[in-house]
Image 1 (cartoon, rainbow, N blue to C red):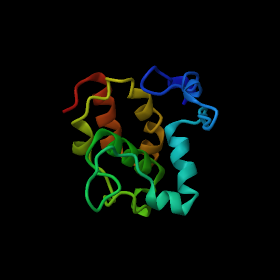
Image 2: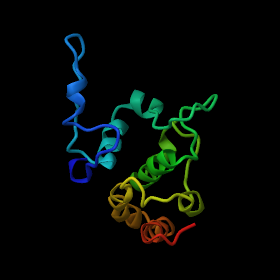
Image 3: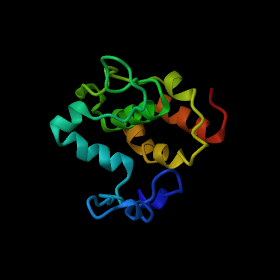
Length: 141
């Protein structure tokens, strides 16, 4: 997601410097947005049914479904109309309440949500659209 690239843990210009003679580190598809990457994953059923975004280790689950990363990813899947088609999350939908508890104004997360707005609007998810706008303005929660 080059347009929204910020120094945070990993960077496509720095990470190859961690390569060695035996291991090469490279970034793939860095020009794609997170939403575009979800679309790619959804085309490969094995990956789509088993992908993990969560850092929590919740027994019996790939993803906790409650942390910001999970909720953001589930929101993207709702925007694409495919959350209910993956086993990677046991949730089949997301509510504005689940979304509103997070501060997306830290760590430059706003662009990840902004790209979802037109698709959420198309799907009639004005509840999520309104909540995301409030979150960006710092008025949610």
